[in-house]
Image 1: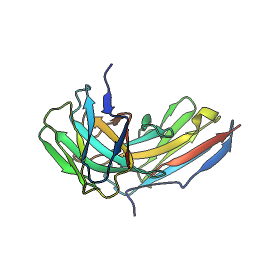
Image 2: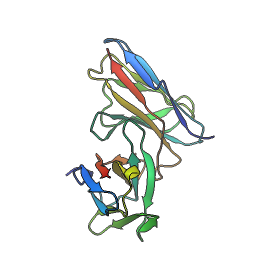
Image 3: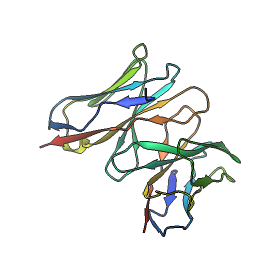
Image 4: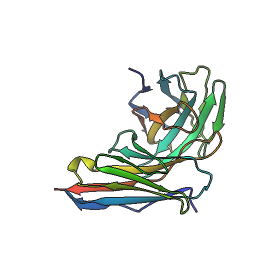
Length: 110
Length: 112
């Protein structure tokens, strides 16, 4: 089982749609969780951190389920500008680097 | 403004040549990382350094070398031993081991 696995893409959705991405992680000792956004030929940028209690930032909601070892990202009222690749990122215990999922590509269509 | 600067943005290498990619940060971060990304693929870890004068191999270190002589700098050398070096290279840093990573803008290396 890979350390971090994401939904296969691409997701093609119309403007205004709600879309959800899931990500599973294999290490139960993982401590920190993040969603990053990466535009084509650009560097990844932090979208939001994911907390145990869940967190929301405008149209974006992130949830963490430690028992089932998955995190999710919900995007409401999709915009054309949301088109990008979304990377699930996990940080394990100790001095180990962040582990990145392969990403899920989202295309929002007018 | 604080941030991570990678240079050059584009780099062309002839087969058999070594090239060095620069990564500088003024965020006072302890940890720095190098990732490689191939088209349509995720990020793969090449090397990382948690402290000056110390670094560890990542998942795909063969054909690469690094140094960490200063906290601000973590250059990556792509050697001739790396058989397929064409890729997008990303440098990142974190203040500690369990926080978000900040990325440079990347270097796109092409072998000609």
